[in-house]
Length: 170
Image 1: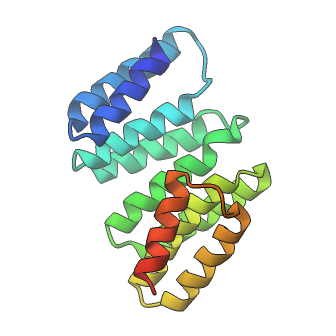
Image 2: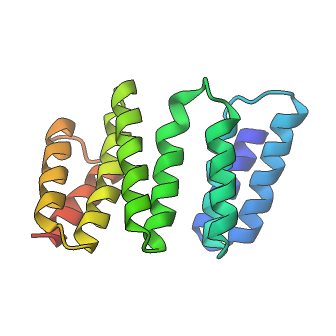
C-alpha cells in the first residue's frame, strides 16, 4: 500500500493537488517506518520534496531532499533522481551555480550505475541552466553528446524533452 500511496501522492502533486499529494506521500513514508524498513525511503522523500516545492515551500523541499540523500546511503539507485529534483528546484529559484552542481553530481552518479536515462535527464536540466545564463553552445553540445549515447530509436519522455530543448536552443 505504501508504494501505491506514494505514487498516487506524487501524481496528485504533479496534477496540481500538491498539498493533498504531500499528505499521501507522508502516509507512505509512515508506512515504511511502521514496517521498520528504509527501502525506497530516498525515492518517497524525493516525491515529498517535489510536492513541497510545488506547494510553494522550496526551503522545506531542500530539507526533505537532504533527508533523502542521508536516508539510506547504501541504496544509491535513487540518488541521481534526488539530485535531479534538487537541481530542478534550484533552477526554478534561479540558483544556477547550485543547480548545475546538483545536475553534474547526478550525471556522475548515473554514470557510475550505467543509468543513461538519469544522466540524460540531469544533462537536460544542466543544459537548461547553462542556456539560461548564456552558454547556449555548451548546452547544445552537452545535449547532443547525451542524445548520442541514447541512440536513435528511444523515444522516452526524457529523450523527447532533451530533443525539444535542443530544438529551442537552435
